[in-house]
Length: 225
Image (cartoon, rainbow, N blue to C red):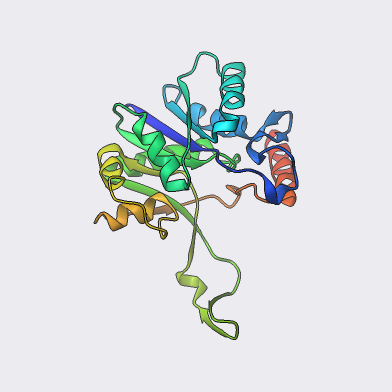
């Protein structure tokens, strides 16, 4: 089976208060992005990696890929204006595949076990969207003063990798862009296909703020220990 991972690395790091994008920040001696790629290659050593980057950081992505994974099938491509367009750029660079996995580059704590579980379900059902339960109370805002409490037992927090059979995803991305395309699952659903959730991982966090980087360091040190 041929599998392809589209790893979207379009962040600029503004909320990290850093001069370089968060996917290139050092975490336990390696850039965040390298931890992410390594997990996918451990899950499937023959997987093709499509790394989607802003144009101004393409050369750095290529340099790191060659430095850490010189013998692996890694292609760096320029992304688009939105996540939808960046994923589409990644899809356009694939000639054929059985499954396509779309992942946030800064979810660097993803485990090979979760990646394999997602691939197994997607091969059977067509899709696998990892998610975890909401732990906090949740309210939906309607204006400044109006807010409706929601039943958190019915809420799932969505993660990546979102995994799909290739033909299903490539056909869904023929749709014109809409602002409510917040992830690949919303695109596939609008194309008329159901999506299927799978249990995610609490540690599969997205590096967004400086505190997330500290937490990621703590988690990685715990895994080694």
